[in-house]
Length: 158
Image (cartoon, rainbow, N blue to C red; front, side, top):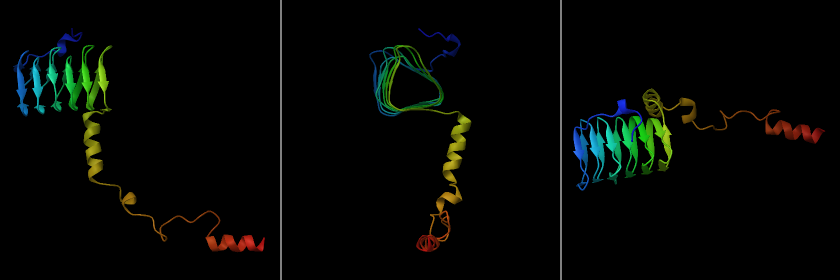
């Protein structure tokens, strides 16, 4: 099923097939979902949504492997892998994105490294001083050929 076997990690928490979990789910360890979840998932470890798994919520984790169905937005601090059986209806924000043949994404994807994410956040917090001041008559660049008055005079003279 997974070609990169060294990426597989043992699950600290398993939501088994036939189990339905409703509400916000927070985990410090790794999480594997083979059942159904309805509610936001925040995991400091890795999340694996198995082929039988159905998630109807936003998911935030270190690395995420999607082999089932997810209806919601994904934020992966590391890698998001969508397997050939995986289906995502939602937006993606991840440092790295892998979609295997047959995998499906219906939404917007944004990939950037953790360093780039930190720099983007810093830039958004301190806007450029030149862009924060509107151009007014005093600071606006002069049109080519001098002032409007001089151009009118030269047309009348010519």
